[in-house]
Amino acid sequence: MSFYDLVQSTLRETAETSVLAFAPELIVCATIVALLVVRMLSTGRSGSAYPVMVLGTLAALLTALLTKTPDRPTELFTGMLMLDSFSLYMRRLLLLFVLLFASLTRVSGTPDRSDATEFYVLVLGASLGMCLMVAANHMLIVFLGIEMASVPSYVLVGVLKDRRKSAEAALKFAVFGAGAAGVMLYGISLLVGTLGTAHLATMSVQLAALFGSGGAGSRELVLALAGLMILVGFAFKLSAVPFHFWAPDAFEGATAEVGAFLSIASKAAALALLVRVALGLGHLPSQLDRAAIQPAVFAAEAAAAAPEIAEGVSQPVLVAAPGSSAALRPVRLYCGWLIAILAGVTCTFGNLAAYGQDNMKRLLAYSTIAHAGYMLMPLAAAILLAGEDPAAARLTVAALAFYIAVYLLMNLGAFAFVAFLRNAIASEELPDYAGLVRRSPGLVVCVAVIMFSLVGLPPLAGFSAKFAIFAQTYKGGLLWLVAIGVANTLVSLFYYLRVVKTMVLDPQRAGRPAPEIGLWSNPGFFCALIAFLLVLLGVFWNPLFAQAEHAASMLLP
Image 1: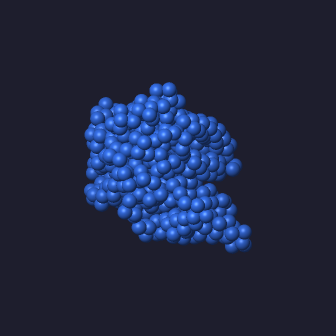
Image 2: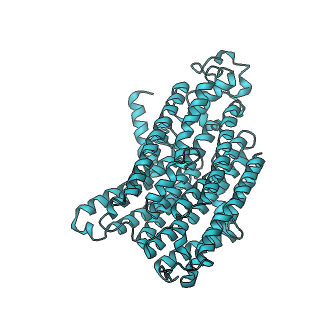
Image 3: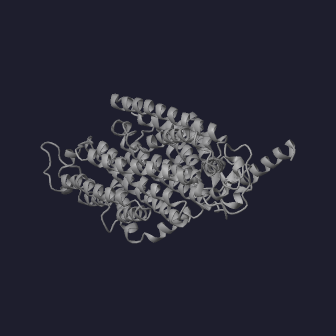
């Protein structure tokens, strides 16, 4: 093929396939531009930002919902992005959250009209980076997506310009983020330099070549170090121990609304990206995809028949037989056990640290750390199952996708409650919630549902989600990790119940009467809607889980 034919083919593929599949992200970009244009006009100072934000996000969500799921995973923009059922599911989930988040900011009144345009532009900019993260198929997009999501988040934390604590939190967040990004970028450079490619599918081929031929001995240390450094970037985004230091201060310094955005959207995108990278590097692409990859597939059983590739990948030998992923077993074991240990430590630390917190935002910050540990458990199991039982691995990823959807509702409701009470009593301290049941009984019932769901008590959605991930983690052979998860669930019961106990049993503080927030008010209706959905999904969880199963169906072909 000549250079001219190559350019024409690339342009045709981009125009006919990639741009259409990328339409939701393009609509988000157009919404950002529209917000800035409206801001320049005189009406931009009179509250036009919110309608533009909602209309643009709704259009992007509808476009994502109408995007047809391809028959097989399809690469976009010459392999930079991947269009499959998993990326579509996560993209729809993120856009749905952004729409709910915009509604929350409207009800809570944060930001005010003078800062609304800048605030929504930052939210949409971060969301655009997260949409790239969930579809990343190339290490360049992995890093670009993480940075596009991170940089606006630093500014969002410091959006309260007149609060010193907010500025300090934003600075800490930015410093930690820059350090984690640098470490991750160095790890990517080591991995790409060793394998000679940044394309995920081709990287798995090269890894199989090295390990299948026995030629990885001199490079194992470099590969292990690269994987560890890349995991630093993911752990930072997930606020996983020991890269969680930024989370409590950032959540306390930021508004509760920004805390909801960081704890939900950021974690969901980081988990989806980690699923794609870890499973992509630990499993060979399908036979159909291998023909499109210039380096050939190396199966472990072909190594003895092809000793000429023992030292590298410069002269690949095509293996016609369907290649099992046995050659990549060391990669899966390394990633799986590393993530499993990280999951156990993270959920244990998060629950223990949350126990003694009086500030609700710090309590919820440690709660999100604990939930990051829970969500890493099925991921570790899926990685370990990928080579031996791909169907079980897909079901495990489906359990994780289901948990992410439920977690979206639970955490959004928890932070919304904190934001509404901040507006009512100008406090975010738990002792100031004493006696709330006497004046706002309906709101307390809704908050109790949210807290019990975060614990994982039946018959709420949190129970269904937690049971699903624990069951799949057990199927992955990680019984010890399930035991840690169950023990941590019992520990978390104490501090979540403490919130309910304070509102129901403690007397009102002298000189500080509890606020009256009716269920028919906007804040009350918002909390009631979240509580209703958690009860509904706790009883009728099959439709959502079926969507999660479909989302994972194209992984590990």
